Amino acid sequence: MAKAEFGTPKYVANQMKARGLQKLRHYCQVCEKQCRDDNGFKCHVQSESHTKKVQQLALEGGDNKRKGKVAEFSSQFLKDFIHLLRSGHGDKFVGANRFYQEYIQDKQHIHMNATRWSSLTVFVAHLGKEGLCRVKQDDAEGLMIAYIDRSAAAERRRKEAQKQMRKYTDEELAMRQLEEKIRAKRPREEEAPLVPLGAKNTGEDKRVSVSLKPATEATSVKLNMKSSHKKIATVKPINVFKKKKTDQEAGNVQSG
Image 1 (tube, rainbow, N blue to C red):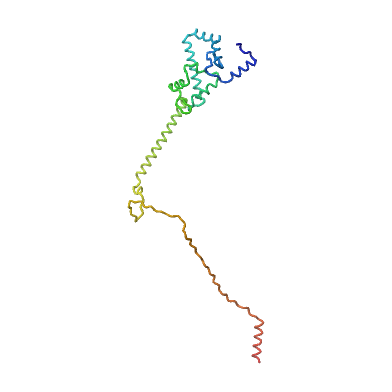
Image 2 (image 1 turned 90 degrees about the vertical axis):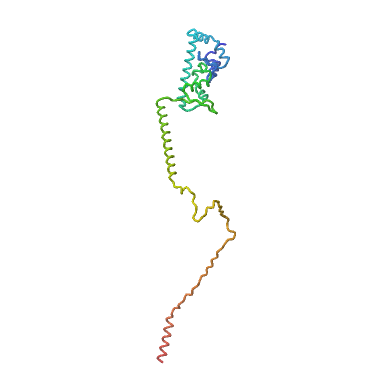
């Protein structure tokens, strides 16, 4: 089938289909070409351009050359993978599969099918074996990886953290020893239970019940206040004119 010419609707449709991410198994690392499906990848492998590149690679060095190319792709894949892990997540754990999805967002990356690792699990095991990453198994995300920073600054931070942990541990040990000494110096009388004076310890526990129910009969207090009335003596005013008249009558009687 002839290739679609530039600017035709078929060419635009092919470009739109090739814009997104495609399956890794449909990618040819030798030609650096992404195919959309099995039929397209099969046609590409049988194409003249792909056949010439493979023949040229075989004539230049044979199996050693092919092994050299695989080693080159593997080294570049490992370098790009570690660089993205260090810059994106630092020394924190992240799901291996989730991070691999981040890595393949770049369509120009080195594909794993061109390296010496057959799967992501084998590659993660290689990272843990070489001491490049910490690997652990999680129930939710499966394999998880974390970059091991071996730089001088990271070593200083790690030593400072260990020193702080030892310092806190020594302080806790000193406090615990001090508490034990204080507890040992306490008199035994303070630790013994207090018994009231005059009480006999019969060894039996007596229960004391307290009733908080209100009284049945209400008591009332009546206050009778009687006011005592005191009589106040009243003085009548003196009539001056009547007194004067009485004095005159008394004078007339004396003169007669």
